[in-house]
Amino acid sequence: MIKRIQYLLICLSLTLTCLLSVSVCQAKKSYVTNFTTVTRKDMGNIVIKWNQNKSVTGYQIQYSQKSSFKGAKTKTVSKKTTQMTLKKLPKKTYYIRIRGYKKIRGKRKYSSYRKCKVIAWNDNWKYADSSKIHKDAAVIFYAPSKRKGKIIAINAGHGTKNGSKYKTWCHPDHSPKVTGGSTKKGEEKAACITSGTTLLNGTSEAAATLKVAKKVKSLLLTAGYDVLMLRQDSNANLDNIARTVYANQYAACHISIHFDSTKTNKGAYDCAVPNVSSYRKMYPVSAMYKKHLALGKDLISGLKAAKVKIYGKGAKDVDLTQTSYSTVPSAVIEVGDRKTSISDANVKKMAQGIVKGVKKYF
Image (cartoon, rainbow, N blue to C red; front, side):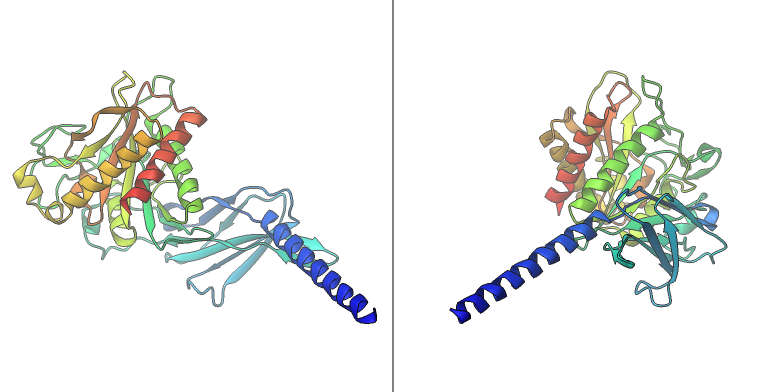
């Protein structure tokens, strides 16, 4: 009888321990804090913004030039704070992480970290000397769990103030464009980055593409992909070549989001590599165009599966700066046109479609 009571007490103790462990784990999850944006303008101060978590007592931010965070500097702020600026930092690459905490009986219970990498521009990168606007930094956001080991570059098209004031070579070999577009066929130079169109509801194309890009980022992180964000706000001082150079250096693929200038709700399509012999023989297009086409095809397939309207066969030949300089699989997707709805529900469908396409490609 005594042994039986002892056995029951042991079982009860183990059960309570398990329940307490689960409770603590769930509590820590409730303290998780996610970045909204992390930006570095003109390679100066780093501005960190995050979602407010009403369950926490405060937040802890660490930053370091080392991925191990060895010797990291730590900042702790109250739960009411949702933004911090790291000032007067050297113009180098930084790793940053954030977590929430709750004070319980005088002790802090921390959530897991959310991490990112703010990447300083490097003039020695391939094609870096072809860019005219590259004062800002691109940022990699790391998936919190089940990481797939792949970085997806997401490029919200347009959104660079005065980007059309300067011109860059359309192709690395300075040959003329083989199709028309925002720059005419036969031109050797194009605007660094154009301002884009305006949707019929008055939203700028830059604002619309950013809304889609942010949703894509969120879904990719949840799916285990790390995300290289090439633009996070209304003005990113990175031209088309600079964004491509960043993607070439760090990403497994590069996806640029746009809206067509037509106003018929024509549907989504891939700006496919033109079937022009001279263009397809030009490096790096010669080495990459089959992968560009495959990525574009899978993204359109994903969008179709998500019930997004598709234009024609889902592809239209367009000679673009991005694909001309890309050394990783690259696609420029027109997710709609000026008449396309950018309601939360429709943007979610677009983002889900792009993520489906990424999964299919890899």
